[in-house]
Length: 165
Image (cartoon, rainbow, N blue to C red; front, side):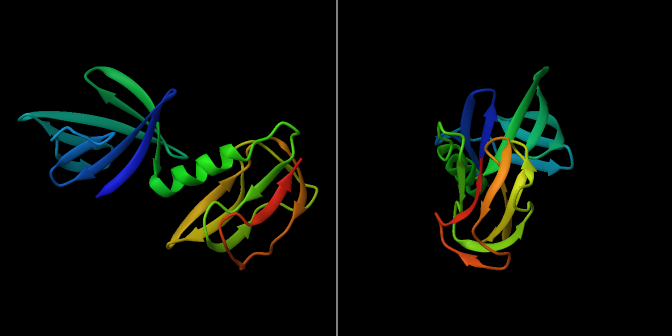
């Protein structure tokens, strides 16, 4: 089963795909994916086929067309969604953001140096977990105040990686 979190505007849905159908927020729609090609999904809903063309815009963003309506979405895996929620929780009022490891793993890369400027949404580190590379993004604009770890270190969830002020 593949599980994703899809955001359209302020609405977020949990979508699970399996051979029997699609579950949206655990409600079964019994609409199996008949075919998944580059830029096209074909769905079977109550013996009616739907072609859903989509365009991957990068950084998890997709545009798709369904029944003549265009939608812009952000699609994340379960692990990416957990990491994103973890980063959002780290925001606080004094504009000092401690970037913590959202999960245990191997710190592959730190993309910034001490004193370097960073923009909101910019990747500041890359963490390998469960054989996937996960980008850790800056929650705000600022300057790298502290770097606590070195590349190549194995780290646990919640360990401070760096601070942005």
